Amino acid sequence: MAKANTTPIKISVDRLVACTHCGLCLPTCPTYRELGLEMDSPRGRLYLIRAVDEERLPANDSFAKYTYRCLDCRACETACPSGVHFGQLIEEARALYEEHNRRPLSVRLLRKFVFEWLFPYPRRINMLFNLLWFYQKSGLRWFARNLGILKLMGSTGKMEALLPELPAPWERKKIRGIISAQGERRYRVGFFTGCVMNTVFTPTNLATIRVLVANGCELVIPGNQNCCGALNIHSGEREAASRMARRNIRAFESLDLDAIVVNAAGCGATLKEYPELLAHDPEYAERAETFSNKVKDISEFLVGIEMSTPEGEIRKRVTYDEPCHLVHAQKIHDPPRQMIHKIPGIDFVELRESEWCCGSAGIYNILQPEISAQILERKIKYIQDTEAEIVLTGNPGCLLQIQMGIRQHQLPIRVMHPIDLLDAAYRKKEI
Ligand code: SF4
Ligand code: SF4
Image 1 (cartoon, protein in one colour):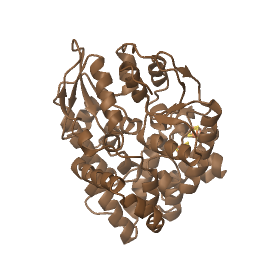
Image 2: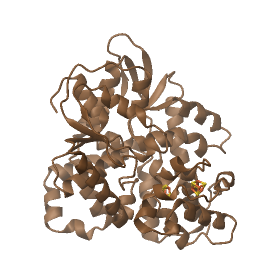
Image 3: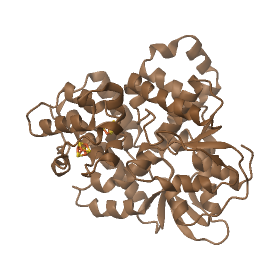
């Protein structure tokens, strides 16, 4: 049954027919490698989407099984010689399923809570993380873990296991308003803070501010920005994501900015793809283009402005894992490495299969825990092989997932955002 009051979902057929079925994407697909089924490969999924679009097959639960088993990592896009924009197709396919099917009441309520009541409202997200911080600090966590309560809570309990120690709520209050450049102002830059980055990785957002300010940027951090909408889009909730996109465009468009900087790969990819999301909105299509043209990943921005060299040395063996939404969705491969190499003293070692997904993929690790665990296992093995003391990655989901793998294996390896290491070098701080 179709949902009421929403724009009908259409698959971008021009993108779908670009596939020549050559199969060159198959060896790069993590789910195909793990499961060995054509239906779990990019080509198989494209066949399926086309069959549903041409009404040869229904958009039923089997369709959902294979479209949701995709990580949306977009490694297939990088491999594809025909330029098939797989990410958009899989996201439209999921939206098509959601439009034509009615999930059980409990799932509908949960999705409504998360996608429509929580994510679009930064204050509510802040409130939730304040409560979680209290839960961690007050001893409630000890009871929940030791009395086995989390095991009874299913996927919510699994999410709890992913959470690192949360920063104090008052730290977040420093991330707003206008922050002056150090020395002469070279650029006026907007900072997209992200919801998970701002609540779980507050110190990384503070480090990002310090690094930009040290490089002559005046920062503008509008308080009326909201979540980018990535998780909504990945879950087929394009209407709610479109509303969030419009709000972000309004929050930044009149600020006279040279760039809008973001330090989370997943958010950056989503912000850059707002024109695609709002292509059929006559009021916002052009504004989305203007907005997205200004969005830059922090590494892309710093390398582009010829960042200064930090004075502090960091004598550590370091490796780098590439977030899928940086390397495959945004095609940003060199800038994070160039940024890391700016740090004096670093002993950098490349990670085997650094461009392969870690299994996080938004909330994939919660929805598909077995496949995600298999993918993570391989990642941790290759990280171990580097003998690195620090693994760097620039996306909150990847940070949480790799931290979890490192914890499970009890390895003496730190997992950090590259900007945290760079900030430490600027401040000549011990790591
Ligand atoms: S997005 Fe990733 S998991 Fe999905 S089909 Fe492409 S390579 Fe495979
Ligand atoms: S998506 Fe691209 S690489 Fe994969 S089968 Fe189609 S044309 Fe070939």
